[in-house]
Image 1 (tube, helix red, strand yellow):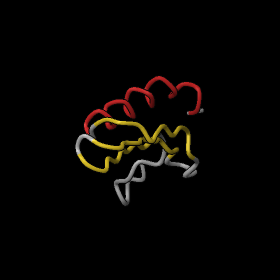
Image 2 (image 1 turned 90 degrees about the vertical axis):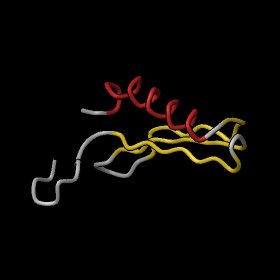
Image 3 (image 1 turned 135 degrees about the vertical axis):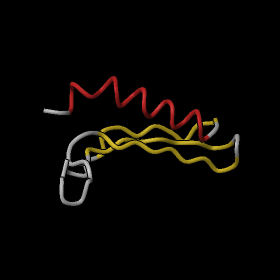
Length: 68
């Protein structure tokens, strides 16, 4: 963590988006340290809450594989 700015410097940031609710949804995760996209799924049909939950679950599953 960057103590001066109180921002995380390592980890996976996740987000989901949905056009309509329910509607066309997608989600992804990026490495905070580099901005590299770790995963991206969609578009598919769902809700924003489902996308956020799936993104978090997938990030936890992938964490040991992408965080040194």
